[in-house]
Image 1 (cartoon, one colour):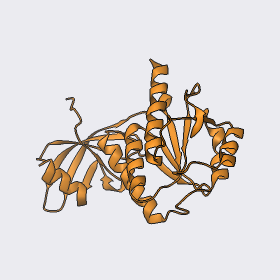
Image 2 (image 1 turned 90 degrees about the vertical axis):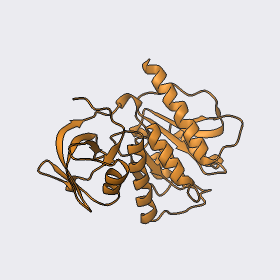
Image 3 (image 1 turned 135 degrees about the horizontal axis):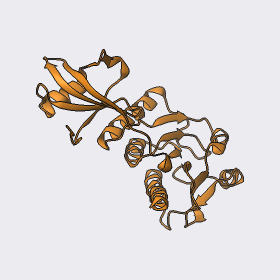
Image 4 (image 1 turned 90 degrees about the horizontal axis):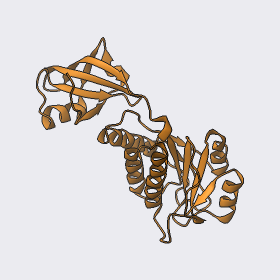
Length: 242
């Protein structure tokens, strides 16, 4: 029987034992009290690594829900629409917004790096873990099966070292071209701090093969520039496929 998926939940491998799932905590609360799940109800899970688990509820107690795995399906990535985002961290909860929306839109991997004008010079482990949790929530909200990876790079030189892994690298810059270059397969999109990159940083990017692109005449906040650029890149990649 085919089931339309309206809700998707996250499961870690240690929760899976002999074809059974044991759910507690917040996920238990959501399934029991929000979905009002019943015995034999179908619930879908993902491990964030491309696997989708179709399960059915077998037992509900005061602090645990047990489910039986009916089917495990591997969902391949859309390799032709694969792209990553590198950005300089920003103040407050705006990083949360950037990570959430970029994940929903389909970014595969995030690189956090620090530039000359970075307001935040270092992100702690607890903050990185917080952002990872946001990628899980956004992945589930948008019914995706891959959790984006978050990688922290110390400086621009380390960012430059990964350029050879990409077919196309574009960097947001008000002085750049308003038209996107011809994007090919794997794309890296770079967004700078509020005041933009220093001239010598842009020069380093260009010397290493990046193409500066302008997002218009208006000066945008970093998180806005990230989302606008992602949509622009996605639209270009999808139009090439159609």
